[in-house]
Length: 333
Image (cartoon, rainbow, N blue to C red; front, top):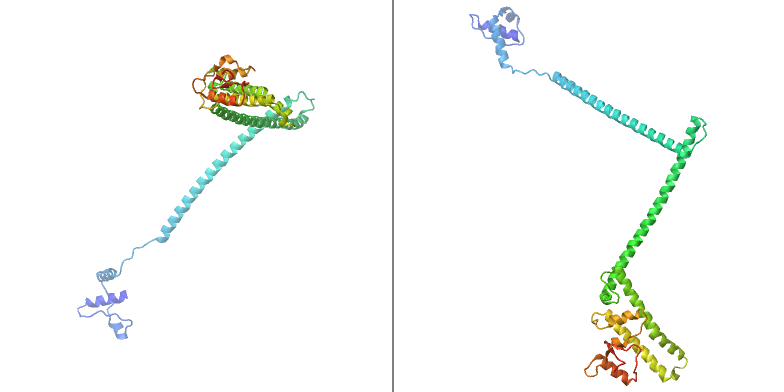
């Protein structure tokens, strides 16, 4: 094709006016008459004209670039793998070194235990190092068993102590609760024998001693004689004589008067005054009532004792075993 173009360009430069034609085949006449000479400048002009019309393509080298990227990737992968192997080898070396150190420490401890086992039982016959090494294991096991037994014993003792401590703590809490309730029920400061210098335990003990003394005094002087008269006449109650009837009433009224006075130490509405504390305190020693500590009945002004005295007179009851009512001696009227 280029040859045809060059031939046509040559014909165009001849004196005759000829046009360049592009054909696929030439006839014999055309083949004989055509001019096959062309200038170099014309050929260059044709080549430049052809190149200006053909689009230029930038030569790329994808294969070589891909090859370079793959090589670099493999290189960095190899470097990273090498670093990982080095780190793993370092860690393995450190663990191996630590394991060797631990094994050596355990071996030293075992040797110390064997020496202790040899020294604790006492001297043994010299049968050679081999037999001595064999005897160390049973001795060590025996010592371990002894230590285990001691540990179990100490654990059991500790458990028993903890139980005792729990019981003691519970008892202390119960005692504090009971003591607080007693402080609320009784007028502790008015009881015989109260002293601020005493501890709370001593005060509570003194209170209980007073309670017991009053109970025994009431039983011995009033309730016991009353029960004796009742038992003596329980088979024939209608035949009881007048003296025994009056004695039973006297005992019952005296017992009630005793506890009426004792309630002054318990009920807040009843004010403690006069010789009540001294009389209650005297009951702890088994003493009877001292009439000198009582006031004579005042019949000129109204009082509770006067009302009670008139009721007793209507019932023909004159002398009482416990004649106290509001600090008044009902027997002295």
